[in-house]
Every structure is written in structure tokens, then in C-alpha cells.
Image (cartoon, rainbow, N blue to C red; front, side, top):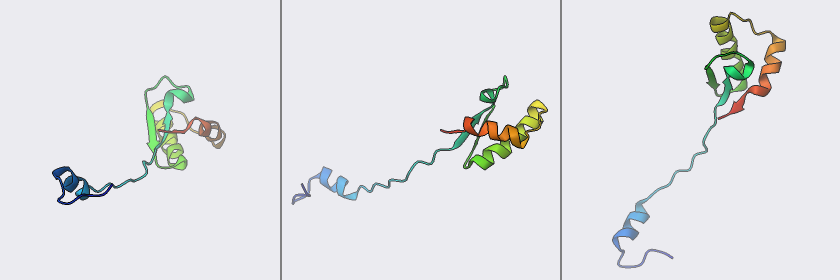
Length: 82
């Protein structure tokens, strides 16, 4: 089904419509409460490494907890995409 001639107003509108489909990039997300803290904090970043870095900073500042490499390995499965 193409545009008939003479074009109808809707046909003109549709022919000028452009669609740009871009993939939606989901953010890597960690909810602090999922780690075991009574905290509403949510950490989001583009990569798992960035989430872990921000989580370590948050843990130190908000919970006076240093994230060790062993803890980081336990936290990784709690990071998901949203």
C-alpha cells in the first residue's frame, strides 16, 4: 500500500514521518538494601565496574564499611539491569 495520488492529508503526514529506533540502554543497578543494609540507596552506572566503585564509596561514606575484594565478588550477582 503506497501513497496514492493525489495524496490525502494523512498520506502526506505519514510520508514525512521518520522513525528512529535506538536500543534502550539499561543501567546496571544495585539496591543497597539487597546487600543487607537498611538503606534506600540505589547505585546506577553504565558498567558493573562503575557500580562496584560507587557502591564501595557509598558503603564507606554511609555505612562506615570498607568493601573488600571478597565482598565485591559477593555483591556482583546482586547487580542487575533496570
